[in-house]
Image (tube, rainbow, N blue to C red):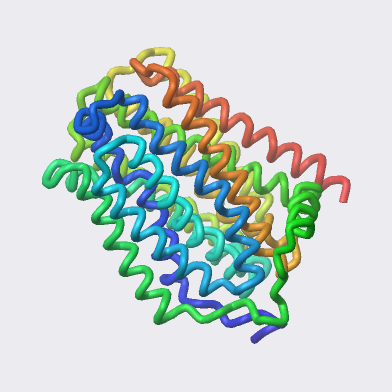
Length: 399
């Protein structure tokens, strides 16, 4: 142990933990029209599978984070992965939309343990720039999973039907459970564990929200990621239904995005050797906002091909890649290690709670072009850059 910190687990292990939970959020997207036909419901109803997942993901973190502070990281994440595996199988064999949505709630509850605990483990084992660099891998997994998943899901849907996507997800969960069981050692010693008393828990969350730096960094993550969540729920309608793109080709279009996000996180790590993390965050915010403006321009032009939509979102997505890892690390660096689980949970709740709201709104709006999505992308990226300005030039300037 160094400076009282535990030895960090392999980064690859944290990556696959997060990847499994994140692919579940979007792997079914190419089969969305088929699910609606198979279950005899509207596409709008099936679209609610996204906000349902995000809402459960957000709320469950508020419980899982404190539990990991009390009982340790390892046991909680193992239990979460078991829930994830079982719920994925229930999704695969659902014949009713209500059963499918309930199964998605359970699936998200299990999946969110990988996110909360991965971030808490990084806080347990690293600080400062080292934490930001480790968190960049977490950010990559969070972005690559949801955006690569439709590529895989497109082929699974075309070859075997939409149910195969959930069977695939369950199989990945089994692999992750085995890896975690064999490779993950506990990173929170018993003497540092914090019992989750209800009154204390509410006080902890209140104190975290009163921590202006933690709150601002966490809200920036939520707003910047909101563009990605809006894209996930709108893109199958825009590309498959409106523009007539085939599911497997749609998956290819979506897969282009991770390369930009990975590039951005790599650049971010290199930039951290020369400029401050906050300056990197400002640059990321400008890219995010610029992509939103360009998307609105294309939306007003009522473009009829995928390329302009992809280009504008790619610019915002590159900015998000610069933002996420650094904001995660800065948020958790502003709190004590013994409440890192609770802080990670609250930050995740804000992140995915906002995602649930924006995707729920979009799922209830008829989309006959990219215009509605363009408004959503510009709105959320505007919120992000505004919060960055407030944080850097108002909150931190007073300290």
